[in-house]
Amino acid sequence: MKYWQPKYETMPGSEIKALQLKRLKNVVKNVYEHVPFYRQAFGSAGIKPDDISSLDDISKLPCTSKADLRDNYPFGLFATPMRDVVRLHASSGTSGKATVVGYTASDIETWSDLMARNFTMVGIGPEDIFQNAVNYGLFTGGLGIHFGIERIGATAVPSGTGNTRHQLEMMADFGVTALHCTPSYALYLAETALELDMVDRLSLRTGCFGAEPWSANTRLELEDVLDIKAYDSYGLSEMFGPGVAFECQEQHGLHIWDDHFLVEILDPDGESVAPGEKGELVLSSLTKQAMPLIRYRTGDITSIMEDECLCGRTHTRLDKVVGRTDDMLIVRGINVFPSQIESVLVGIPEVGDQFQVLIDRKRHKLDEIHIKVELMERGFTGELKDLGDLKCCVEDRLKAVLNLRTVVELVERGAIPRTAGKAQRVVDVRGGY
Ligand code: DLL
Image 1 (cartoon, rainbow, N blue to C red):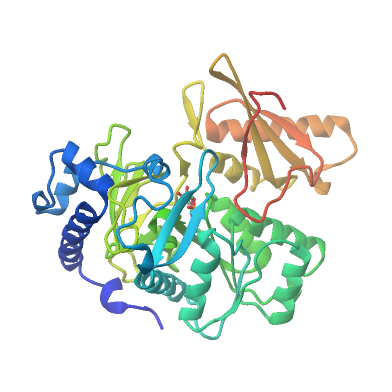
Image 2: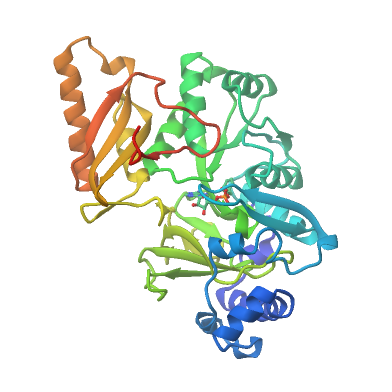
């Protein structure tokens, strides 16, 4: 099967726009009537729901952000009574209180169908055995992906996280054909499979990786080592979770489901950027019931790709998310995303794929960017001079991509902690190591 919901996935652009407008008007009216926060915010902007008569009118509405979720913790942004909420998820975030999201039974249905669209899009179906190697707790990647696997009738292996060797054994013994996890954990799985000489015992065909940025070179590495096709999966808890946007088999941009989300790309002043230009992804949920969000600033940097996709889907395509506005390091006026560093390191066989960026900001200035990289056995000749040469080579390759000098430190293999969740690439050592 090529499409899960062909009527929606291939809907002509003009019809999608009409559907979006109808849904936008409904959701704006709904939050205005049921969520005091929105009534007040729209009031301060001098807007009433009836003022929305075209999709462009969305720009009249105020934006929302993670801070609004925190301020209204835990359920202040819910638009339905708690008796209609059948599930909660939460994301811990890096600072402050967790942000909580809620779902009605119908939200779970919608979400499962979006996941089913994505899996069908990359050729996963009832014949597949699908291992979901992420945390099954409050993180949306566990149950969100799981419900999608069951919706398409594939066999779910809810392996959760931890015990990498056991994960690989399960994969081999059960004949797992599809895998979902974070890309950094996928690299670790691949590394461990090589080490244990297990790659030949695996039957994997498809990998779905997301929840954090990853580079084109990481894709090549994962596809090569695990002998799979690897697809990028984007989502955020505030918009259900995973499943918001996903690559198709063209592997050229992520389809974001326009019948459920209204997409804007804004510059730091809140103005729309031209198609193709990078900016912050701002999303409005058009169909969520328990907690619809209007003009939610995701903090994620991407751009809209304009050309039509050969797969026949008519929905907006997003370029890979390079990182978050708050992950971006500004070093001597140059913007650096950890995913750029990853793309360089993955291409150098003598060093590992795991890395850590240490920021030492002296007097509010980012003076130095210090990168810890693991030395692989094949990069170790026993000659000190060779180590020095390798360090310079990595620094030069990074300079060519980042346009900036960095200080590379070669560390022992395994010295950088692996995680089954989102990798922590940037460590702020301003308070000391
Ligand atoms: O990470 C949902 C998810 C689970 C997506 C599993 C994909 C797979 P949160 O924990 O709320 O939700 O984190 C959302 O993670 O705003 C991005 O900054 C980042 N992110 C998610 N997917 C990607 C991706 C889940 N494919 C935040 N590329 C988002 C880059 C991503 N960043």
